Image (tube, rainbow, N blue to C red; front, side):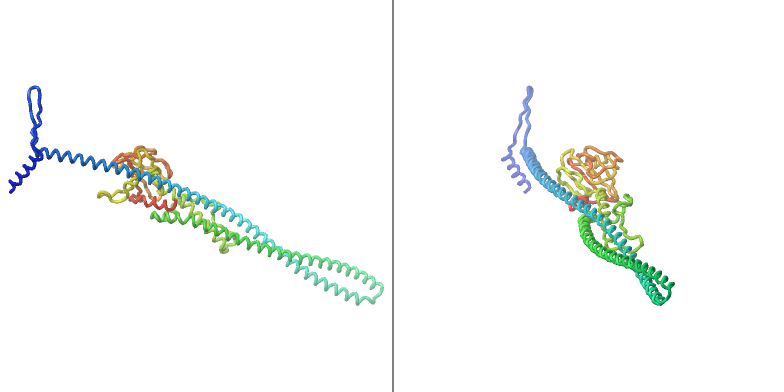
Length: 433
């Protein structure tokens, strides 16, 4: 059976691939190469495989080229939309900051006016009390004078029947009575004037009380505007840090240690030096100042955490964080043309700028909060070890050094030495900025 199949197979080969001979002639000799059917079919299969591979490879290259063009166009559109949104948010943030600053200035002016009005009210209250005391004294003096006058009149009546001496005494008593009457009239005029001044002081106190109420309403409106501005500014930053898995209290405490100076307009307010409990307005003002301090600390912390994108030009993601080909890929790959600028994603210090095995040319930057970023496969360094860099500063050029299949940037974020997904920080910032 096997022999018959072999004979049929050989007959098939002889029919489609007959034996051929290739003659090689020289001046002295003639030789030939015998091409058997099996040799011909092997050569045919090899040639067909090469042609098929060429067609498939060419198709893949064309599809990749077309896909890369579409990705680049999409990346440009996304970048344009992102930059437009970033500019809108930046303008809105600046407007909110300007509103907050203007509100703070109005608040400070209102506090100054309240302080002046409180001083005037206290002075008015003091004058009113002094006038009341003066009125009481004058009334007491007046009553005493009237009693003395009545006593003098009674004495004059008893002595009206006396002699010449009595007449002389009567004349003297009349002079004394005239003096007392003039003094009494003057005292009455002063009393009327004091009463009028007291009434004027009470009217002024009522007017000042109304002005203080109007000022309190204005202050309440200013407080509401400031509270809304702080809410709009602080909550997105707080959400960004929480979305990145960062402990906000620990982050703010660490930033506060580095910026521990005190004094100035953000110090807590105190309107009383007698140790009394703070008023509702004082509490609201202090809460706003605390939110402003928290906002400033958040802005400082945002510069020191890797929330920015390491590539600002057009690019495409070629590989994400996670397992790849059975191994852990500890970063995110950004593909772009050779020499594309690479930027630091946060403030920090360069701790490595050199070759490192599979990373090729590598830059390591140490940031605050135990965070380290790595930028691998670079073609050129723009920084050196020990140099302090800021977020957005150019640190190198994209390349293809080390273990790499093409020009791209391998970007890593490590927290406490452990690699984490860089897109956590980038996406958290995209939701805010």
